[in-house]
Figure 1 (tube, rainbow, N blue to C red):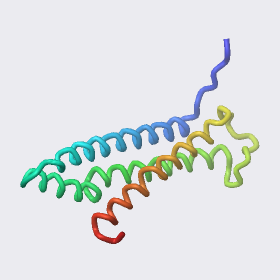
Figure 2: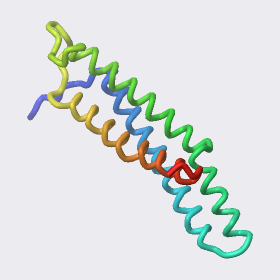
Figure 3: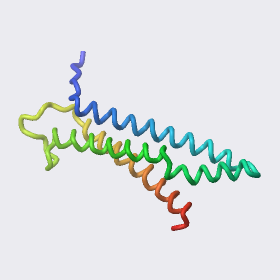
Figure 4: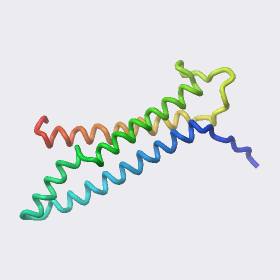
Length: 131
């Protein structure tokens, strides 16, 4: 049998923060889909959905998503500094870390930021008439 390494609490905290980001993204996208389907209706009901769609990008769901991204970024940064230091090289005498786990945490966070943040900002600017 292969011996499994226990993950450090900081790494577990970073992974939990990334899972929270996934949950917030799913909530946001589900609400966006619901509102886009409703906006296709005609009349007052359709206009109501369109208005709610424009408000979505500055509403509480978007704020919670942004907050979750900030917390995840901080948790990943703390874990990386604790185990790799500021130079990116493993610290002498540092706790053992499963190989590649920190790299995957950083990579997943960067992908989330690339996908969610720019898309949301583009929608906000478009809705406000900046683009």
